[in-house]
Amino acid sequence: MAPARIQAGALGRPGFDAIYVQHPIQDQTLEQIAARADAVAAEIVKRLTTAGK
Image (tube, rainbow, N blue to C red; front, side, top):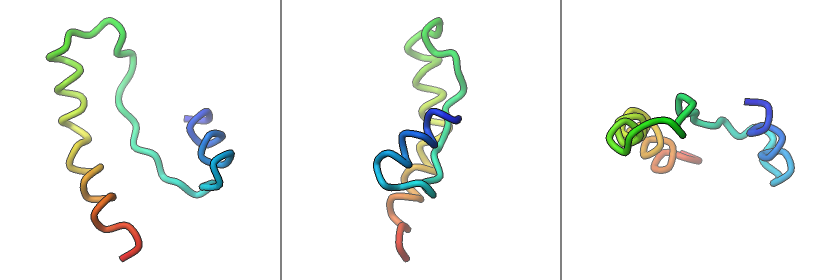
């Protein structure tokens, strides 16, 4: 979590609220990785389509 906050600050977005995907992923199958992505996809779409409203 800290690296994401540091990177956001370096990019001028210190208050950026990241969405985290459960780790580790390197030992997961493609299907398991897709399931993790699906689990956060709705939140990503919500944030992208309501930002600044």
